[in-house]
Image (cartoon, each protein chain N blue to C red):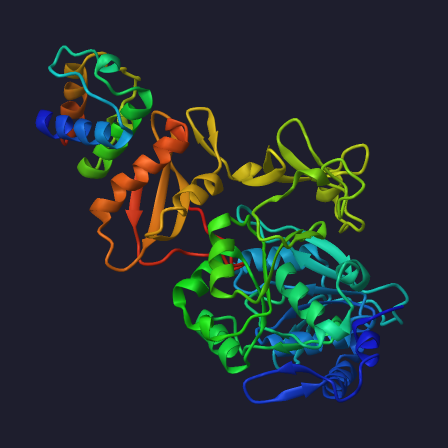
Length: 439
Length: 83
């Protein structure tokens, strides 16, 4: 059975797999630390352990220690409301809680005797849930890493940065891809934006994965322009052409990849041609990276090679095993574009507006650095479209506003155009790094 | 109040690219004023931001203003503290 630890054992003991502000960690050191941790956790063998750690380094050590050793590992995302945390821990049937300093606390009065773990350890994760309560999905080391690149000749040239919470799907992908590909991962001491950016610069990161919202924030911040990037990865939200163009301009030597992935279906496909959306020829075609279809409601359906387990996921599968992604798409000539989440549409008097579509259009205006479109409740229409903007220094909002209205009116239906445009200093992201839409 | 509503109507018309009829008065039929139902919804939302209330969420029985005079009346009615 392949575990994270056995995978690491395949690398040279002195291969430097992690970097922090004060040390370089070799594969040997990482495995030794994890082995020590495992000894302290002997009573948790064969049980389910929830990881409540804030240090990304401690989290990685715990994953190496527990994969193949405990029955299940629950990666509790950072920054959840304590009520939700409690509910998730109960739903995942956790036996122990592991904290930053290696403290292990039993969570139940009656614990089953520790048994040798014979099945692959389940990696329990919470979906990002931009709306509503997160749900738990179960992966294994194999299902998480099946589509990852194992070409270490290429991977060894990368130093990956970490902009995501490694307890969430996107962050865990970065951690595992970096370890499997033989790269070095620059581990920040915390998930605060300032600390993360400082770590990127100090560790001279040349590969970085982040949401489009975070990439826009990095471009506005500007400090990352000093880095020579060779791999730029975007995921978690739909990617617009303006951002892809902006990244290509600032990092001409980088390969730019946008990944379509979800906690439920894993990484489904990657697009590398610097164009938004994906090629329409992938639809209903054996040539596609995964089988893809569009249903009658305009939802993208995919049939991934491996699927996480869970009741909620089963209910979203159709008779031929396709998963309804709940992502709305539209085909325009030879390209399929993402419009936004099916549940995220704004309803203006019965007409659906996809916030991402309006945002992408507004971003075409050069003075607009970033934008968030959301629904604002209205007594007559149900909702109206509202936009918050971050604009370039020296731009007069009074001049910009009519320009935005005019640009939207020329390209959109009247009900899709923002009725409210507010200029703000900065926009908010959710803990998963996705744009927060305050409805 | 009348002046405030008329000014906001003009601003909404400008934003939505609509043209208001030349002479707006109390008898102007709202849906013939140049603002369509969407424009009218935006007007109500704008007035709520500026005046701090939306009469259409406060009324117990729904009333649909037909002419501009009805609209003035509704806003005045709910502006009073004993509404």
